[in-house]
Image 1 (cartoon, rainbow, N blue to C red):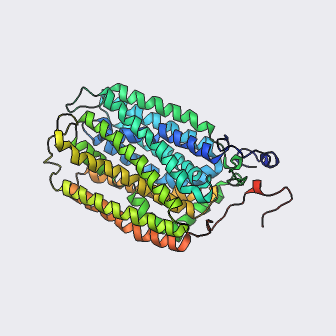
Image 2 (spheres, one colour):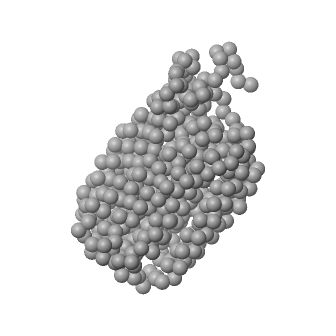
Image 3 (cartoon, rainbow, N blue to C red):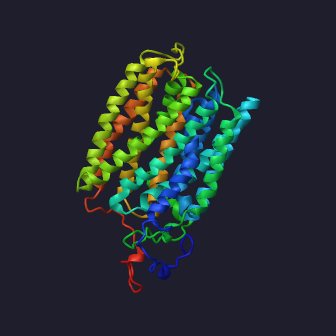
Length: 462
């Protein structure tokens, strides 16, 4: 039995002339992009304001620690859960937890009790593990192997449009509140409406057995998995040399958010300007993902060479941008913050920090898109990739949980910057080694999937 039942003979007759077929990889990746636009996209906008939109970031820091602690566990387990439940149940369960999290800050606006926010954060960590394992499996296994970078950039652009729109919500609703203040109720209600829409939209995602590429091949022929099988395969991930090489990049990939959101955007800008900055931060992510996606798919004929070039470009940009961040950071500390900048009133003083924050967003998308491309190059099968992405998200979230507590304990800002810069620097040579050893130039991963739609009825897999 497949995820939704295998109707192989009928699916073999599906026309593949239109790229905009409901069961095409393009439409399905677009749909998962829209789901993430509504849920984690709005969550990013909420977090990007610094402190979850509150003047005091303590509640948000503690909620995020709870969130990423459970995310670290269920991120790793999420790939196995996806293989058991299929995409619709996994994604819908995950999306629903985002609504609760936004609602907890609406409650906090009135009661100032952080317990609800912390519990909601822990529940969101479980749901986010489900959502991102499913998203990663879809984004890396549904597209054709030679266009994974393009589809990753498509997803990343749609997803981060959520952050752009989400940034506009607090900017517009709090435009006349230039003084220090928490965001109003309408901001949180707006986020909750989008997140609810994303939960409903997740039910439109097709299982991989029903998705047919333009050349007539299917994404996968996997069956429902079993808990015992997934438990064994998840344990194996921790001894898989490929995953061990990815682990430092995974740990680093969300570690910097607490520093950038709270100690750059939150520390340097007033309320309405933080909302405006978020529009450009997440907009920069769209630009970065498209740029690196083009390089990883089209720059050279050799897929391995494209990987090396992509890693080199991201490494060079990261060095330049974090060096700019260092130059700014030496000028302020936790207990010696500069006056809040306003996009209208601060004149030229606003430009430098704004460009820095924009560049951080650009770099985030390029780095994560590059890592997803490397993961997608390791296999083509949804079952394998859901576990790989789950491992990536689990390690990523463990790093984030530590990072939010680092900020909550007021570790010196300069130390936070140096640690963030160092973590990503360590990951580049390890990713290059992985590309050299595991990425094939024949555009096939080491663990190819079988595509039943491309076989006739009498063919059997070898």
